[in-house]
Image (cartoon, rainbow, N blue to C red):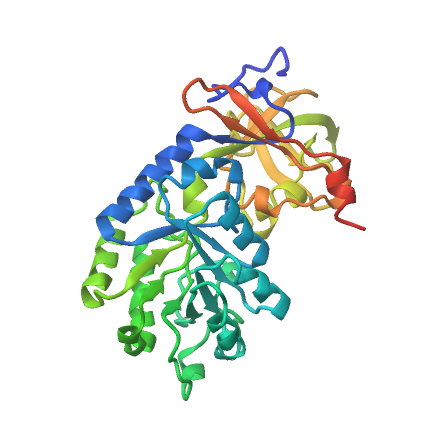
Length: 390
């Protein structure tokens, strides 16, 4: 629904054909990303995994699995989801495993990366006695990062993630078959190249005895300005120096970057030092990275505050005072019932939503890549909130 005096922007799909609020993933855009990632694998010789922490819409996995070799997870439930709905290789990393979790992980994992030598030594015999053959590695900390947001910097001083070179002194690496580092966040291939130099300087002496190396995630491969040629060169150079190594990348964001939307509706408009539109979605419950990163998501047909004739602060429907998405301007005044479409809302959205305040989760929809029809994959109700709490 759009107010009579508001000219409807050119939307890439029928926004009235889906529930509100709803995450909507465009299959055609998803396949475009996957095609590029497949070509990177062909050209570089690397193997690319889907990081479920970033995108876990398993209804799309029949498509995604045509292009990528498997999934990487952060624990027992993601590992099971990857094994049961995606197939292929299942890689698992956690800052620490419990005995009970490890018993589940061993049912699904092909590769396990441990965070510390102590965790490796604790579970080494357990893994060796598992009925499945599992390749074990160690996550290391190159102590180098170009990340600009401390919240997302695994190599910040005092980080709990990964083992530093100094902490490996006197440790027998026998039995370990891989090294894993993760330092990037929404970065280009130059940051990877610089990180690799630090990684090799600190851990290169271990690589001749390894079978694989994992470059982690944060590679923004499908972003328009990403230097894919440089990425391919960097990987091929590594494989030339260490021809025995299998190289893995595990992006989550790059798979679903710019493939999805969040459709929402205006519920009310109030005035307090400017117009405020209250939406049927929420920054804190439905798109928490808006507050955590923080960042300002784009809206189709909207501009910066003051850029267009009518400016609004857009707020969510929870009781949190700071549940504010940002300030935007429009060519015509908003009215109750108008629908807004946030862009790039597929990755780190569905996986991070909450039912804070009992707010219902957005529905999940897909746009067919051929006929452009919208299919609702999942809706949520009271039970999804209630069953989390007792």
